[in-house]
Length: 141
Image 1 (cartoon, rainbow, N blue to C red):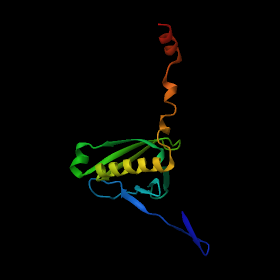
Image 2: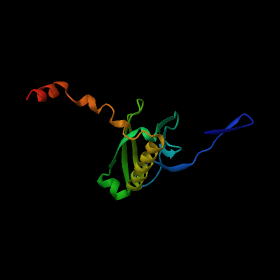
Image 3: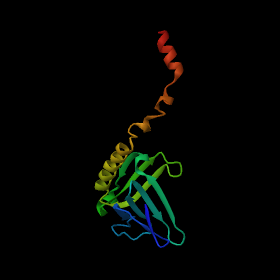
Image 4: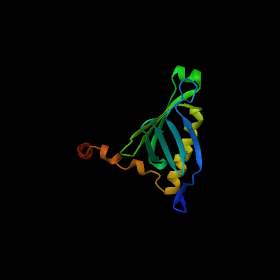
């Protein structure tokens, strides 16, 4: 949300978490991750930049990957599967305290789903995996 004063828009945000992509244990990268206002933002690029935004309640699955070098340097990669068309998979690469971040994200996602009353919505479409011919065969046996 923005607040307008004298033709100027000021961003009013409460960032819950932010970090950068790390190289070894140094956060020296032009990729920045931020969570706030029920959204996940991924800003990347130096000369030309890109900002991706995903509503937290649209995230359906979280996976944490930690290779041996990542464990040595205290980082990890979180992969998020979403119901968003433009970014169906978001990777938060080489972030510090990745285990704690995954837990916080998981809790925030559940809270957003409860607040927006969309719990269980990601199961829509699961019916499409049922073979109607299989049901007919079961009825005749």
